[in-house]
Image 1 (cartoon, rainbow, N blue to C red):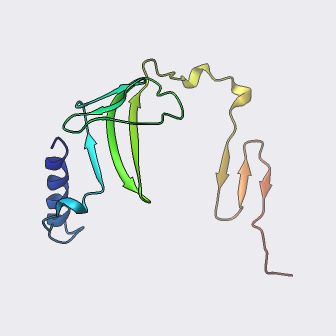
Image 2 (cartoon, rainbow, N blue to C red):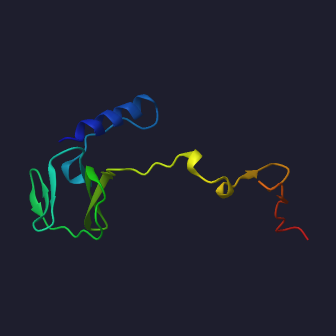
Image 3 (cartoon, rainbow, N blue to C red):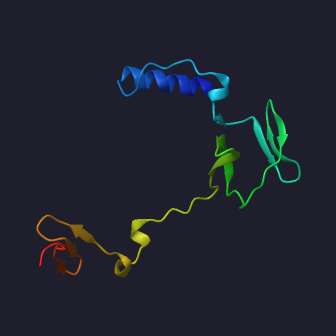
Length: 132
């Protein structure tokens, strides 16, 4: 129920901005995904994945989830159920442009007259594949 209002809002917004047709009532069996945007789920390595309203389900975690889980989407695709986690890293590594050594910075300019002009003023002509 947490994400249904968002889906209805988006459907009507797209209709009024003429990007989609009028939203139809969807039957319950036609939903192929459900989203837990903030809460209602818990990952327990011993018991599995807990979903509110459903309970514990078995899950195979093939790699560790970095950071704090912000959103969970359960999706039915190709006769399989998948859990998609969106996580926020605890300490994102930001790289400042001043910290990059000048010798590592490279530039390429894609142009109209020349195919590529490199930062050392070298130019490459357009490839002529079909001309002899």
